[in-house]
Length: 104
Image (cartoon, rainbow, N blue to C red):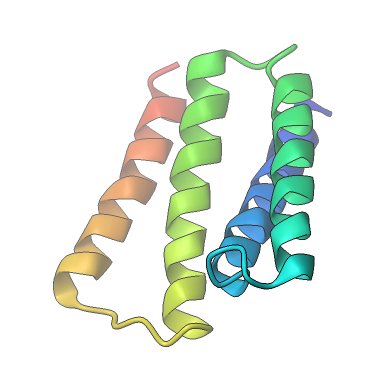
């Protein structure tokens, strides 16, 4: 169940970060409210996940996959450029998350 909570926390964090972009600097009320709503729920589920998972593993997965997935959303949805450097960096983030998990 801890891994379920962790992946739910990641999905909520991605939702909150997407709302951050959509809020246009807190000028749009609904995405601005949802930003705080999703981030709060994300931290709640991350807290539930670390009851049974090592914090080093949980936080690495939460932040690493959240960062990589958010970059992919930025590229696919918001039209951000996919450069070679960005692709390599995203690959390194994913390798780092895998490495932290395998080092356990």
